[in-house]
Image 1 (cartoon, helix red, strand yellow):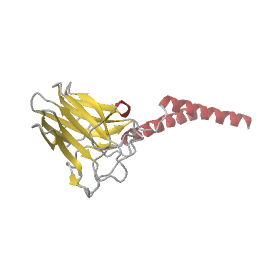
Image 2 (cartoon, rainbow, N blue to C red):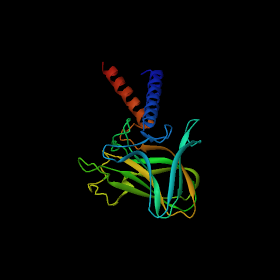
Image 3 (cartoon, rainbow, N blue to C red):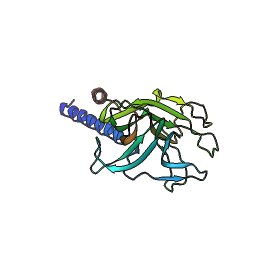
Image 4 (cartoon, rainbow, N blue to C red):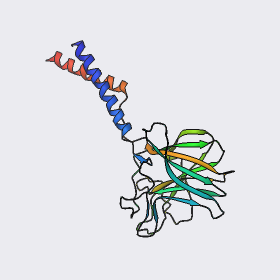
Length: 243
C-alpha cells in the first residue's frame, strides 16, 4: 500500500472531522442576541408577546433596554439587554416568542437540545435569581397557561460569566395559571424569562447571547475518524491483495 496515500486520506478524514464539528457548533440555535431591539406586541387573545417585564405588587421596579456594550465572544459592535431592578419580592423580564408581525404567540421545538445558556454580567450581590422556561399550553388555549420550569441561580460573581442550565436540572414551578402538568416535553416552548427576588439595593444586570446547547447530532471524535480512515485503507489493501 502506498504510504503517501495513507497519510493523505488520514489527513482528509481529520479535516472533514474538524469542518463538521465547527459546522455543528456554528449551527446551535441562538435564541436572543438583542441586536434587533426588544420587539413586543399583543396577540389576538390579549396576551403580551415579545419582551415584557413583570414584578410584584409591593413596589418593586424593573426596566429593560438595549445598549451597545462588548460581551465575550461577540462581534463589535454588539448590543446587550440591560436589566435595571429594585426588588422587594420578585421582578424580572420575559420573552414570549413572537411571529414577525408581532400578533401571534408561537412556540419553538427545543427537544433536540440538552440545555440553555446565556452570558450574564453579575454584581456579586448575593441576590437569588431564577431562570424559567415556558413549555406547552393546554390545547386551544387563549390564556397564558404555559407550563413553567425553573432553575435557581445566584448572583455570586462580578462581571461576565456564562450560565449554562441543563433542562434535566430544572424543576416544575406552580404559578397558578392552570398550566398542564404533563412533563417537560420541550417540543413546544413558548418562551423564557430571567428574574430575581429581594435585592438590598437597586441593581443593574446585563444579558447577552441566549442559546441552546448539546445538539443531538453526534460528530465522531478526530481519533475515531483516524481509525476509520486507517480501517478503510486496510480493507482496500486486503481487497487489492486478493485481486
